[in-house]
Image (cartoon, rainbow, N blue to C red; front, top):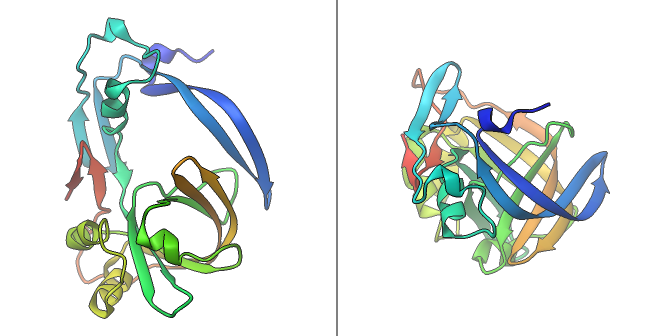
Length: 219
């Protein structure tokens, strides 16, 4: 039996819906409670190198956990989990190249060749994003691309120079086709099938992924 005290953040979920797409089960659930075990640090490791290591910061004693119901402290805790930074790009129907910065990109372990990401309904990128069958590209950003990650949080039109830099300086690039979409509250969940992967040649040894943690980019 799993000893929850020795794990990191754990969440209780209330199942809402399951969709099967290309052998992958897309599960929609509502988080009902969040708990924290005995973990004192949150860290991200890439090829035996610590990208980020931060002490867990709580506004309340651990005796107050788990959180029922979810509150501000829950968001504070979840924001401390490190996330790789990505840029997602697509070509809108009118021909303009669009991009957005994303931390919600996941590669489902049980569904080889699939990548999932979220996009907010109010974003300009969402307005230009196509439906099932449309093409998108996903770029895992490197530490050389902090300015790009910051720029496409608020900007959608992908400039020519930035497009070149994203392609040449990223850790890895994936060309994908949208297989399934789902609206959940104020976000659009997009499940894509990978058509091809490219690892750019890098002129800098020791290049590392760009990571978001504790409300800032870790370079």
